[in-house]
Length: 424
Ligand SMILES: *Cc1c(COP(=O)(O)O)cnc(C)c1O
Image (tube, rainbow, N blue to C red; front, side):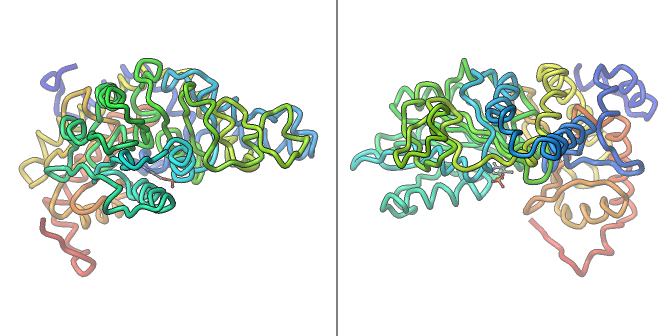
C-alpha cells in the first residue's frame, strides 16, 4: 500500500485493524490494558504460548526429575530446527545457546585465525557496543591491539552505514567481518547478500548479528551463505528477559574445532563416556559449551510456534504496512513540531522499528511513559517506536501519534527539565 492511500482519522486506523489478517494473534499476547507498548524490539511481550511452554517444562522437571534428559537431550537443537524457517537455514546449522555476546566470542574464537598479513577484524561504528567489546577482546586474546587490529567503518551521518564503504574497507589485511543486519538505532537494513558476497570474493569470513532482524525481517541464509550469525531471542522473538540466544554456523565450518569448547559440544554418542579428550559434534550443537538452561529456553518454543504458524512473510507484510502508517502520521501530524524520521524509508532498507528523532527525545520519552506509552530512548535524540506485527494495532499507532502531538503542543515534557536537556 502506498503512503498516499492512508487517511488521517481514527476510523481509518480502526478499518486497518479490521482488515488485519493477524488481528487474532494479539489475543495470544499479554498486552496490558491502557498501555501502548512500542518496545517489543527491546523486550518482546509475553505470550500465552510462551507461558504454556514454560509451564510444560516445569511439569516435566516436577514429574520426571533426571529422566527428563531422555526426551530433552536435543532440546537446544530442536529449538534450532524451529528457528530455521525464520532465516531459511538448514536446521543443523542452528543451536539455541548462550547469549548474543558469548556466541560472538564463540564464533570469532572459532573462525578468527589471524596471520601476519591478514589479522584485522572489520566492524562498523554504529553496532551495539557489546559486539565491539567482544571483538576488541578477541583481538587482544590473539596478542593484537584493537586500535591496530580492529578496523572500523565509520558512519557519515551517525545513522546509516554505507555498504559501498564497507566493501571498500575489505582490504587484504582483513580476516573477518562482524556487522549488524539491522542497525539498532536507525533501523537500517544492511544488504547482507551484497556485503557477504563481496567479503567472500576477497577471501574474508563474515558473521552477522541478527538481534534486531530476527523475527522482524525474513532472511535467506541458503542464498546468502554467511559464515556465522548470532542473535538474542528476547526482542522480536518474545522469549523472555535473558532468554537463550541463537547461533548459526555455516555447514562448511562444521569441521572447525570450537574456540570455546565444553562438554555440551562433544559428540552425542560419546558425551557421557566423559573422556578427557574432546570430540567435536559436527553440527551447530557442537558449539554449545555447558549445560543448556531449559527453563530459560522453553518460552522460545512457544513463541517460535507462533512465528512458524504465521510465517515471516505475513509478519513482514504487516510490519511494513504498520511502520509505513506510523511514518505517514509522523509526516502529516508531527513534522511541524521538529520531529523527523531517521530510518531509511524504502521497504527493503528499513527494519521493524521507526526511528523518530527530536531534539527533546529524552524528555519526550519520559512524558510518553507518563501517558502509558512505552517507547525507548536511544542516545542522543532517538525515540524508537516498534509497532510489532504480532500484537500492536493500527489504532494504537494512531493514539501514539495523537499523544506525541499533545505532549509537544502542551510542552508536557518540560516538567522533566531538571533531569536533562539536550540540543543536538
Ligand atoms: C540487543 C543486542 C545485543 C545484546 O547482547 P546480549 O548478549 O544478548 O545481552 C547484542 N548485539 C546487538 C546488535 C543487539 O541489538
